[in-house]
Amino acid sequence: MNRRDAIKLTAAALSVSVSSSAFATKSLRVLILGGTGFIGPHFVEALSARGHTLTLFNRGKRNAALFPKIETLIGDRNGELDALRDGNWDVVIDNSGYVPRHVRLSAELLKERAERYIFVSSISAYANLTKPGIDEDYPTATLPDPSVEQVNGETYGGLKALCEKAVEQAFGARATILRPTYIVGPGDHTDRFTYWPVRVARGGEMLAPGTPKDPIQFVDVRDLTDFTRACVEEGITGRFNICNPPREVTIGELLEISKRITKADTKFRWADEAFLESNKLLDSGEIPIWSPTKGEYAGAALVNPARAIARGLHFRDAATTVTDTLSWHRTRPAEEQKLRAGLTPEREAELLSKLTG
Ligand SMILES: NC(=O)c1ccc[n+]([C@@H]2O[C@H](COP(=O)([O-])OP(=O)(O)OC[C@H]3O[C@@H](n4cnc5c(N)ncnc54)[C@H](OP(=O)(O)O)[C@@H]3O)[C@@H](O)[C@H]2O)c1
Picture 1: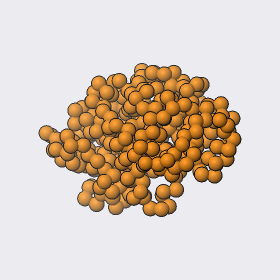
Picture 2 (picture 1 turned 180 degrees about the vertical axis):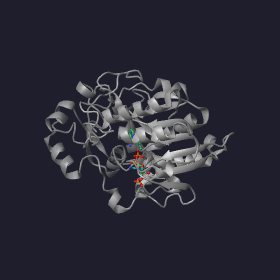
Picture 3 (picture 1 turned 45 degrees about the vertical axis):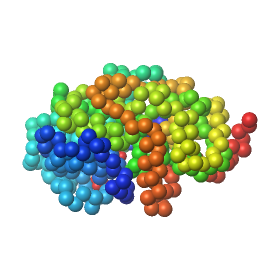
Picture 4 (picture 1 turned 30 degrees about the horizontal axis):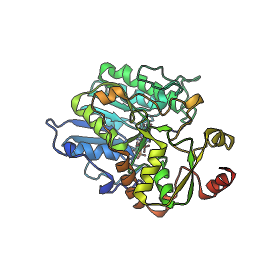
């Protein structure tokens, strides 16, 4: 999500926890719709390491050579599903569903030939993120025109909510809906989390948003992977928010952890919400991950993940995520190291010169 809204995965970028590297007691047939983007490869590595038999379905455009040993069916969710006409699976993982019609097509086609369907949705599926403590029973977003298929910041959440409904209509109690907040860590090509440790590493005076105590929420892609693997193996169904517990990590802690790890001389200059708003920084993508503590997004970093935690969602510490994200970032080709999110050095210098105190 955002506030409105050739990955190169090295072996080091993919970390399967010790407990998950042993073979599962029962080998399952798992179909992944997608599998070669950001989170897909983490799922593929973790499930393969457990001895499950995987099939990928995608268009063969993105990182097509990533998994030469895994069966890959070529098609397009936009109606070209012939490659899925035959076959049976224990579990489908759908991490490429953005358009309800596409999701309905695959869910209806597979409902008699797959036992369960796991859909990767988003916390953007909620009607709003204004209140702290939103749990899975909170109302979901609606769209003025539910037939719209254009995915953008305005429609993303409402479309995700309709995708969820399509899965639940086809699979009923056999559906699992995962609603992650920002998914971060090695392979995250959005740079929304990566920006912060990379910027801290550069040193000097740095603009920091809000106050050091402001909460932030995210999930390391490897923790999402562990939970998804548990859903596959243990038959966990239902709807789950996927994020770290509210106030477990603050923006101040993320920056201090990054400073300690990178041994940088960075000096943080905190810009309050009024400053950020008056400089049009709240919706520009220049201040990623952090959310304003008042107004429309006051609950965006205070979502309640208790239900998933009760079913085993766990979190590596933020220092590990920072260290591994930086290690991965340094392996990226120079062109990809130009960050897609955050402030440019020029823009930051301009803002710092306006910031008094
Ligand atoms: N990144 C986040 O912070 C975040 C947060 C919350 C939720 N999510 C959700 O997480 C999910 C996965 O994210 P991601 O970043 O890993 O996705 P991604 O990088 O966009 O990966 C997409 C995968 O799906 C395939 N694909 C795309 N369009 C297709 C089509 N029309 N037909 C068949 N295959 C298609 C791609 O391969 P080809 O291009 O070769 O077809 C690729 O394997 C998404 O559902 C997203 O909404 C992400």
